[in-house]
Length: 269
Image (cartoon, rainbow, N blue to C red; front, side, top):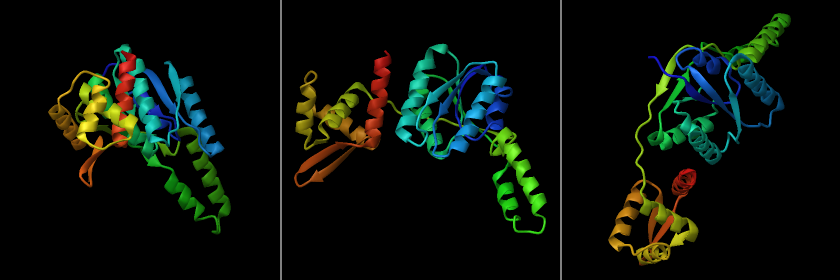
């Protein structure tokens, strides 16, 4: 498959081969965006920094670094949407290489791709390594109390050198494309309902919700609000619960994420 040059988005981590290989193979590069987060392990942060420097040295393209807490789902998700919006006018496809991403970062990256898919062309892929080095390290550490400690230490040094050159995994073999399924959009009334719920935290009835909505907009039919509220609940964006004789309505975390994400799109317009 011949692809046009695209914008690679990767997570700065302890990988190099699986980030570099696609740039000169199946996924030609126009620009690289690296999600860069600090860790509590200075030595590992140095490895990440070195790999980013190697990218800058070996790829004749711009490498853009974006600071983000890679262990914070909301922050990574919003940062991904920010990157998509920032580069949407480049008219280049987005290539998300999730091979190097920590698990939480990977989930946030893919979730953002689902959310933004309707806006542009996005392809998500994972590259399998030819070899993981961690099993070799564990195996050699188990030999430290053996008879040939000098050989074991030499083997560990060799593994260390390979790790510093390629990362915790060596080489790149199989490419796995991750399909993006369609995600349903929400309409203007949905956004207004979410905004009211976010501001009020809890609404105690449909009547109160309609009254709150009418303070900020024109007259709205109660049946329309009931219908859209049901749809929002089906999507998992709001929660309704019977408390005595009243219906208590709350926005949940997914609803807040949707609201913030759509508000970000409106600010770009």
